[in-house]
Length: 271
Ligand code: NAD
Image: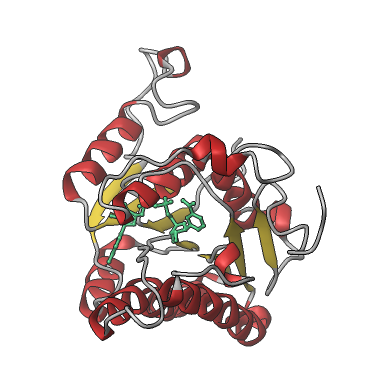
């Protein structure tokens, strides 16, 4: 039996990248997953794919015997802009008892302190930071009624240390780290665990999207870290699955870094 059998999980920003990898892994572990995103076509396609092969590795037809009774849908797409309070209410109304929430949706914006417009700043804060707050607030009553749950908030290594030209993003990711700890302190007594994950450079569409499609040499970036490569979305999904499951039953309010060692050294270290 999978680590998440019988549980309903809501993953934001799950149409692609780390969110999609998490949705795939959750389904493989037996969860029912709500794929929530603003990318309707990609999200629906992923839900269809996961419902076609609901057990094991999606696409591996040997895991889905032809004579098996048709199971309940393993995944469902819901349109959700995480920065919109009303949309959270609408999604939760039809979701059933969500006991796992992954606040994964996020956007990146490059700009110096002097050049970041108020509109750019607020756009990033609304999705990354306000979206995480609204998500936690939306699921907590249901989790309390269900006797507990697990919330995983996606921060970044920019939630631990600064990066130039990432003012709004860094502000939002530090905020997520802080909110996680407040929520963990308030909700531990209700059986709800809240942790943050801090990925380093992961190969997803996020960076090319933020750079307007400019090609980035990820191998060159990857060579800078102790593991000498960038990460894969599946590696973050594995960490999130650990935090969503009972394997992490004594973890709350904690920061889980998956960065290939990027934050291990300091600026004066010699390699
Ligand atoms: P991605 O761009 O591939 O995926 C992000 C998803 O969020 C997309 O599907 C997008 O449509 C969705 N999204 C954006 N705005 C939304 C909104 N308002 N409402 C709902 N969904 C919305 O990026 P990713 O790399 O998979 O990023 C996932 C998370 O991981 C983000 O929070 C990101 O900040 C964080 N992260 C990424 C990296 C990296 O190097 N890729 C590193 C550290 C942290």
